Length: 219
Ligand code: DX5
Ligand code: ZN
Image (cartoon, rainbow, N blue to C red; front, top):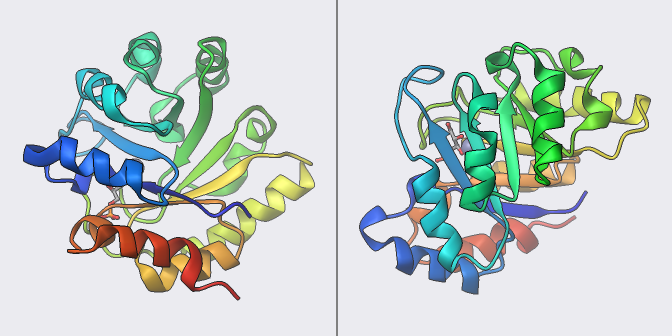
């Protein structure tokens, strides 16, 4: 368990993006999570690689880029060139998952595989040793501000079991609907990384929320 926190810029105030990036640089958060949506894989459009490139100019922490797009293999180099440090692709969006994972590694980025709430974790058994992160979606991807799906707790247990069984060092990241209450439960139950948007950016004191999410609810 690492307790890494990755605030999602989807909930930042885009008119004051530089201010929000600066706040995250000064905070105790660890990574910048950037949600890329194409309106085909998910019913919404957000950012593209140009956005990542601009964030990269000011962000002093790794960029954790979550591709919620079809045919992600077409855009690997583009995101590498924009400054992505980690690239997450969706299991449901990849026909040749093994090949896409290799292509991301070849571009010298860390690779994560994201799975939707309905996708069982055992489907990752043949790739788990090849990936740096499993990204468990705890909401249906596409929007910020949704309610945490409680079934994720069970999924977390199953993911830990799979990682243990395969003797893998893959880290577990959970994304969607994370608040101060479930953050401590998830961290204390083996999540290594949490992504949070609304809870952090809707607060007037985001740095305090970040601190609390990371440290205040330790056992
Ligand atoms: C959902 C995104 C999440 C989202 C998290 O499609 O992948 O990263 O921005 O936002 P909250 O914390 O508001 O659920
Ligand atoms: Zn995300």
